[in-house]
Length: 479
Image (cartoon, rainbow, N blue to C red):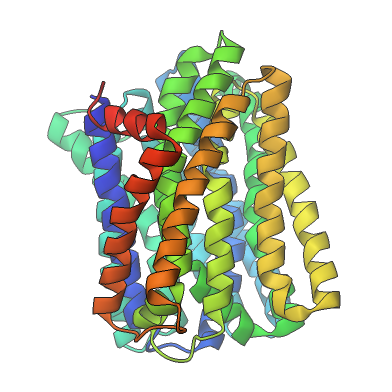
């Protein structure tokens, strides 16, 4: 069964990555960096509002030992109320932010984006129910289908001259489409599709303690990219912000796909260990090390190939995004595996640990940006991003040590050996293809770089950490 879940999750991640990359190839050749910058500002704010509307209830519903229909009804009611508040805030704050950020059209974009958040609640509730039933194939199918459809519509919108709207559709439409596809699965199985939207005070109290802490964590976590976006826009302008947007577009699709599908599976395993905290922490470490076997070489490979990949992906005019994207890829390669410790803390019913991690990381990011911008503005953006990711890792490990003494030691050692293999892979690729500078930017050279990494990394891992490779292969074989 685990093998089926991993296969479906892998297919989901690949399909979403291909769809988002393919749509980016089109829209980046049509839109200007300034348009990407405005879209980044809008999505930064709408992402915060969307996180408040759905994610806290999804996690709370998923981790409850007993779940009743009235819990679902209450979660839907609360999400609808929060959507109304989001629309109201957009109407009031949109024009003010547009004027302060000098972002033409921001107010209208934000209002429409907040209206699209109406489906965030149903999407979160349907995912929570599917996660509790361990229907990960269904989740993967709905996520992949919604992303593919949204990406295709975004391309059509860009070709029709809709500009910023196409970027907003690319990001927000999957949340609208997901509950619709989930409803089709329910209809196909002959199950109940519609759930009344009702208020139950007792059920709200049941989920409130977890939800408000997780809500605060999600709010701070979602605020980080928004804060970074507005700082970059204020100091360097919308064009530089657009370059950051493009740099993130070779990082975020893979990171989001790995985290969404990986968190769902990891959570379902870890939530069963709530009564044995040390074992839960050690298992979270094992999961983190297992994820590192695949995630670290993937992002290190993206970093080393970025000078060829990015121009092929988005065309000319985005040269400044290349060095930024390389640092961002390496930062995510470091931090992403450790995010599964936070999955463990969530499964343990302690979302406050995630809140501390995101809060400390946000403060460190702002301070790092200010210092880097003062010393040398060229490195302010990647420095701030890297500091944020490193801070989240540090806090995750501190809590792991508090909960289970020595619980993270074995995982740290295994991830260090994985990094050694990935570094060997990057060194071989650099020596073969980048010794004389950037090679010819062609699909053939990119394919050769990828094939070299695919061959060299497993061989290097066999030397640096054979048990890591054997454990990963055994997991794929469902042993």
